Length: 132
Image (spheres, rainbow, N blue to C red):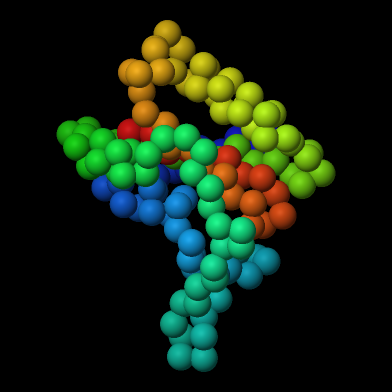
């Protein structure tokens, strides 16, 4: 398991929310270098399978981020598991529940917003999260 908080967190909600729910994304090689076509234009790939929203509402999360008056408007990251970890969907729910209990200790679930989106297009389970 890998838990990573992304360095970004400023700006509108379109960036982080759009990225985790997007069907098409920029294409990268094995070295994480952007792949370009013969004209030098960045190429895209379609995630297969497509991302799955597990919890939350992308439009609501984006709107809450956009409404923030703070310099840091959101926090995003991923909890990633190798294919060999073979987590069941029930275990994935336990991971999300445990993360929320720790990250929002003392708060009722009605007092915070978290968007959870599962990516499985790179032969592993990635539980992406974004919160205003």
